[in-house]
Image (cartoon, rainbow, N blue to C red):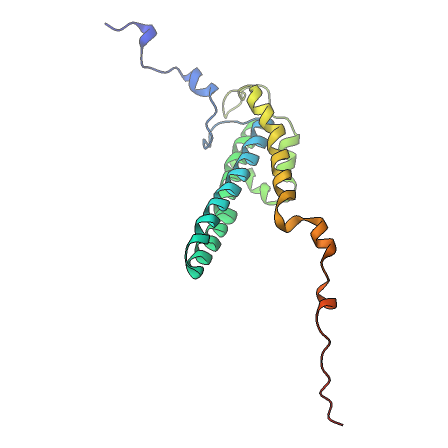
Length: 181
């Protein structure tokens, strides 16, 4: 006979306390929403860098096809899907239906979801979100810093290099005059 302390049955309280990333029925707090969205953005950037590195090794036409297709998939499908899932969970924290996540298509609405606190008590979507661990708070500070550093260190965003470039109109030779008088 098996004792109750070794029982393989998991209580519902232990499941509700652990956040699940792609669950559409749970609630998520402001900080976790912010970190999950930035983490998804960072992961998409890393994924694209890996795909571009592999595409560079392929023949030119195939490499361009692979890199363009992957960019379109990440930008138009994968990242928006993650944003919608997280927005549904964030709206559940306000006791609103997931259909309100269509508001995310309006600019600045995701920032409002980060700024406005949710309900502290349980609602029809479940208990209040689990408290944020220290690691999540550290990630909320480090992820934006890392994304800004990545953005400003990329070759296309070097302000000094752009200042020294000759504008396109000054670098072109003058048009020839073919007037036959």
